Image 1 (cartoon, helix red, strand yellow):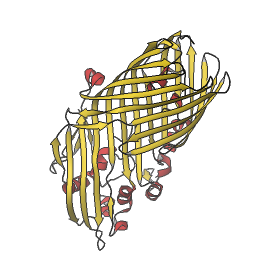
Image 2 (image 1 turned 90 degrees about the vertical axis):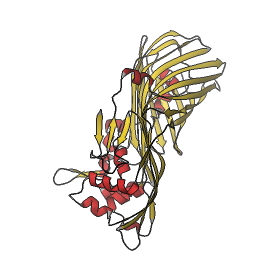
Image 3 (image 1 turned 135 degrees about the horizontal axis):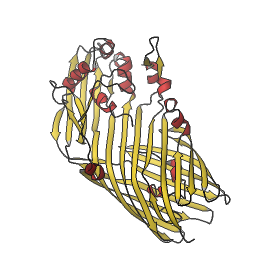
Image 4 (image 1 turned 90 degrees about the horizontal axis):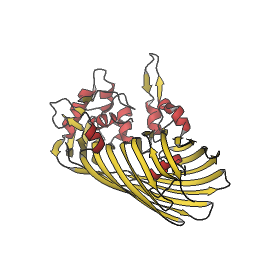
Length: 459
């Protein structure tokens, strides 16, 4: 068993007054990767994972293990929010951090290990299948939580604020099989996915209101309706018992569990491509419509009720050199009073959509546009992009993409694919500066892989 205790360092705050945030911060570093550049690489087999209607120009393709990773945050960068003091220690610039926050701030990451992927078919049909292990994490932090932690509760005299973070951290195994059928200018695609949940750590109801008495910052009234869920390889101990040390433990994974998982789910993808003319092609897809039901080691921790607490000044508590996270955790556990229940529950996947248009300017140059959306836990995250690609003969393509997203901001990416006989190598990033200097940027993404492709399809 690998143990992650609550006294581990926090990603953005050196000390934290919310037990819930301590737990989720353990997972706040490597929701789904956008793969904007990949979706525009029309002759690359991996575009089929984003649109099951995409058919490549080869009859048989086998993909070797490949990896995709992305991490980002809404308007937060490490180097802009930290500095070094005279003792050489890295510290948070608290006021700068608070000023830069939105009402809701998301930290997200995605890692996907594609074990294999293959496809075969003719010019009229294609069958594809594959297996991947995926880990999707997102944490949404309200600005009020950072204000409370870094500036104290005096600013909230007479006010009620909700400091509850929301989070969903899921790892799962995915087996897929799909088909694409061509009807002249129109191609339709469908893919079914069998999911095996490995671990989940997520929030349900997310209400943790704090009211500061307008006469005294030491008198707080708390109203909570907050749910924490864990299943699979994740287990929380001590959350419901104030006399126990609070720990988050992760079990060891075996080969069978990695391949199939013990918590079952199902999802499917839909896609279509339409060749408007010899030069213009439009596509659309909706990905990851489905959910996982968690039954293995599934527990739900609930805090619900109203509480009054006298004698707690949050800012003084944080400034006290003798205070440690154990004291804060014990205090907040007593206040919020979590109850544990063993019960199955379900979590949905992050639903994505891709809508593209590609126009072939000449034999060598193609331009296009893209609208990408991401839906999760009631949030809607759109991204708009334009791209250009240059075909350097049959063996090499080079492309660039510029995008503007709600959570990723302005980004510039590049992609390339190299074909050496049947071997195809590729690389894509949606934000090249973020990949080179991740501490200066709020978003980084990269994908790399290799294919074996045989047999040219008939035109």
